Image 1 (cartoon, one colour):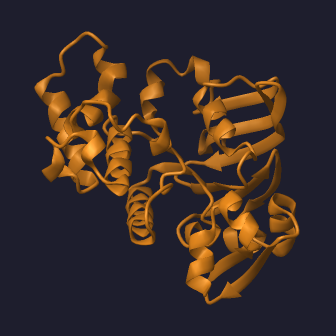
Image 2 (cartoon, one colour):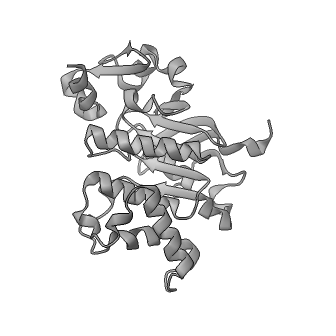
Image 3 (cartoon, one colour):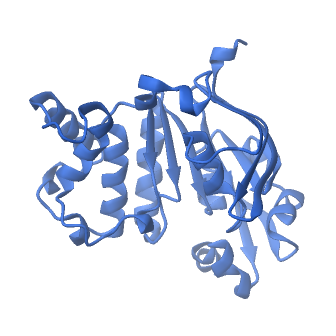
Length: 274
């Protein structure tokens, strides 16, 4: 295997967030074409890890490489990366149409004060078609449902034809059916060769779709295939003794005490089991 087989390389990475250590000594590789889920409780450092890969946060120790170079040195290759933030980080009252949201994904290429070309607009429409949003081009972003907003943010990330797609909790605030449709969409994109790194709390659901999982609680607990690493021992290190894993067919499920469910974000799984 050559160095070029890895899209993301983290070597003994530690990151501070404000006054506390958010990530401690993370070493991990992500292969080209891999679908990886970052799992862990709130405050475990998952979003910090995504931002570190993007170059938005600097490690205090260790090295990060994306496509073989530090994120700050990507240059034009930065357009190889698509990023989908949590929808809660986007102002729903922002007075902009769905189509314009997708065009924003091209601003790094177009420039802030230049008008988009016909080719740019065609690329935006193709991205909307790829997520099934082509009929909502003139709808205001804030009037869309949570699931539609998430799909639109995925389209914005896809408009640059990325080789690497990073998503931070893309199913937050949506119902189970919408969540499944988003995972189906990501599975289709993965089938087209895009490397995907996904932050999620949906342990049971996401395990059906991804190649590998990285369980994080400041440090890297385990990293490997879902069926091999999602064990009670790993979950105990992530969530504490209130978590329990059991198998039901091919999909692992996790249940937690009721008072922990909101923290871990698995109330939907508890309902399904009842």
